[in-house]
Amino acid sequence: MSLFKSLFGPKPLPKDTIPGLTLYHFTTCPFCLKVRANLRRLGLSVEHRNIHRSRKAFNELVQGGGKKQVPCLRIENESDEAATWLYESDAINRYLQEHFA
Image (cartoon, rainbow, N blue to C red; front, side, top):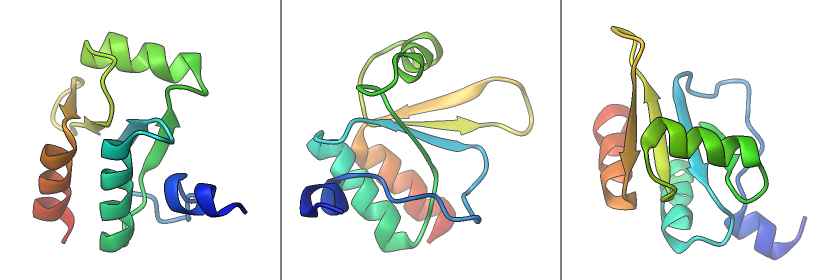
């Protein structure tokens, strides 16, 4: 594995991935890196969808969240069918800290 990929790429998903959370990102985005680093620091694993490698992921992000901005954390709500689309690295990190630290 290259040094670049080990620092910037998403880690393989272990079996204990948090259900209902999906991070839309791309590899070289510094704000995405900030969120991925926080996930590693907290020992959390969520599904990653790279919008530069998958047109389907890009379309999901734009149609579901309304913007093509990353990072974006999609949070599936148990109480209803609508998902919450959380943008901005600081807001995502705050959410992760409050709910999983």
